[in-house]
Length: 280
Image (cartoon, rainbow, N blue to C red; front, top):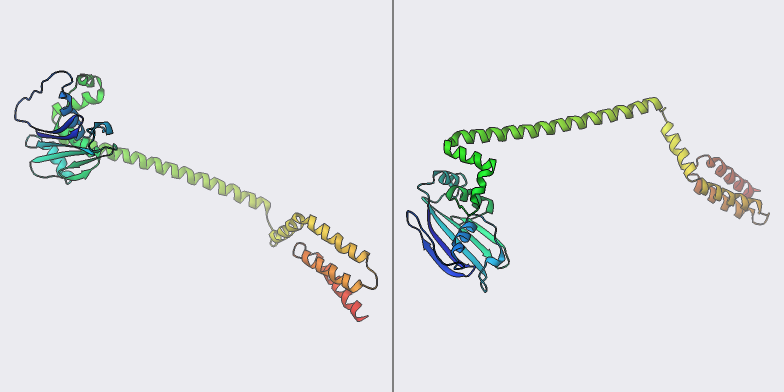
């Protein structure tokens, strides 16, 4: 039962306290007098959507509180206990809306997400507007009314738990099936790669030979250019500077031996020629 509604700096209202008694309460007045403000404020306490325009002009925030008595709401009491928000036989829902549009929700003084305000609000009160009857056309609402009339809450909880278990099992099964498919694809790829290697039948030391050939071919331009320069040096040499030119050609070829090991023989010949020339 709604026992009290407190409104501060909301819409056109500066301060308003409404104490509700048992039985029916009617709020009357002319059009535009602000009758719906109380309903709007209550809806916000129950987790409704907030907007900065709801804050009274000139105020920094709007503060709304709804106090409920829980004697006739055992489902709400159980919800509060299950969520560690119980505070006796009463419950206080509070909503604070800042002028910048941000809002916070509280249950019995504890900050909570708006989803919890909505969940608890559905157990505490029902608000019927002028279009509320259209809910009767929705299958989910029809099922909710049927379940409420049947009064089998324990069975509903068991069914809900079983459904969640089944749904989680389906997700787990789908995950395992996906992983199995990925493993099968990986196995097929490895088998294909293994077959390629077996068909290729590499011999011991063949990789090193291929790597050496790759380096030689990849640097063929440099090998050709530098070799031609060294050859040109020796072709243009004369007796006066032959020793110096042999040294230069040998150094040029030495730089190429890391790219083509076959040039080690040429390098050795140039080195022997330089030694023989120096001894002559």
